[in-house]
Amino acid sequence: MSEKYRVVIRNELNTTIDGYVEVVNKCTQSLVTIVFNDIKPATKQLFDSPQWYDGTLATQIIETTKDYMTDYQSFLNPSILDLLIENLLDKFLVTYLTALHRTSKLKMPAAADRIKADVALAYDFFASILGPNKSTEELEQQFEIIEMCHALLTASKNLVFLSFWSFAKVHGPNLTFVEGLMKSRDDLDRSAVNEVMESIKRKVEEGLADRMSIYFLSRTPR
Image (cartoon, rainbow, N blue to C red; front, side):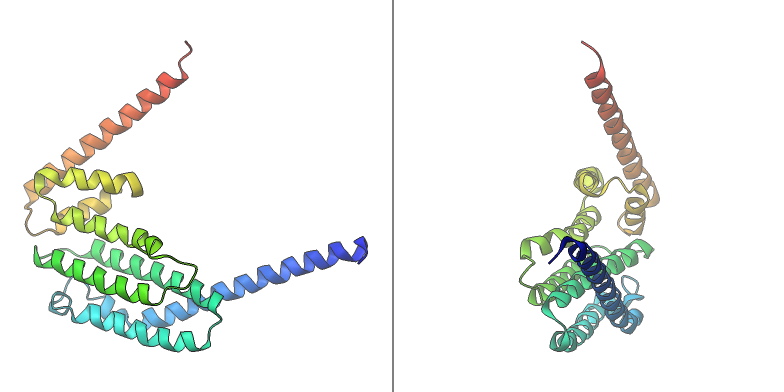
């Protein structure tokens, strides 16, 4: 093939591939939207209803999602299916964490036990549909955010900071989110929440000051 046509064909091929990827992304996002529109009545009741505490909602969400995935797996190309599963997992985690942040009161320790059970159920489901390009280690890393939230919810008042520090090292301080979790715990009254958050904020400020000191010291001429 002459150089004259080689460049044109390469450009056209790249444009076609980019277009294919864009169409695939839009299609998989639409398929995920269909699933979550169906389970929206259940996800809206997460953390705030008796049906969540008895496990009904988690089972309903996972079983409905499983039914959709059975249909999707019958028709989708394996590479597209992998992308769909990735988008589905992201949407599940965002939906679950958003609902957790939105809740006003969690009945402890029952709520902590329910979250742990929800995570186990969801993890087993996603592990069962993993494509060949994704390992269970990667899946564990993605579920780690919920496990860190669980640690924040179950830590004693005096030890919350340790769980917070593990969370902050990976996801940043996110003080508004963390404060929302603390306020939702019915085993902590308002004064206890204030005490916890003041301690956390003080430690965050101290950590920032320490990092700035190290930064400026490293730039000081010797």
